[in-house]
Length: 336
Image (cartoon, rainbow, N blue to C red):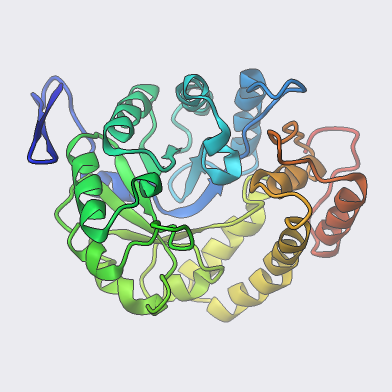
């Protein structure tokens, strides 16, 4: 396979029989449902523990993250993807894909890179065996909305995996507007949007695109997203106790929105309140995710500095929150 750059867009040159690609509908069928943003295992020297990642993949699958309607998302922000070395990133994806053995779709994530490096990473991810990539805008290029269209158009033309666009509008230059997404309707590799509305826009302004792109909720309100035609959600703790989140998804699929919302507010909100408060002490999206995982029986090592692990008092408080919401915290005698 080769790519020619023409007028700022990549032109794919491919013989289908030699390099078959997944079409949009096939990719959309995989990137939906309960998406688990999994932590990255580090050892005491802050190096990636690939053996533990393989073991953890087996645990996540045993806990219920398998088949259609579940996704493992590797090296995203909660998985400390921006903190990974380039040499670690591809090997990490390959490790999880090989451990999953086709039992659950595996995605990767690209963070804030320019067009050329993003396409190069997409090739690495494809070779590793992922079915999709979450891609954040190239914020360090200070992109305009026109640049967003050029960037994702080139990435679509130059990649063979499904792309989930992460609308990081809280970052300077990270916002993508609904009218910009509408200009991407014909970008075949763009299959999903991780959606929360930029300032000045309403939540529902993206749903005219629900038949083109899978809309994945990032607003802490997956019930409303699903009710309007959305296709999935993400949350802290999915990998630690998938049963709860898979049950929420089943409720929504059955139209039991009030029941699902009540359970969500009772369970997820206390953890998010804890995260907001402790995040003022030390930042990093992996801190609480790793704390939850350890409490639920799967220690994944420390976050990379300067982020600090939850301290003893914070771990005790978080454990009590998890016990109070009714998750089955193991007694420590064996891995959950």
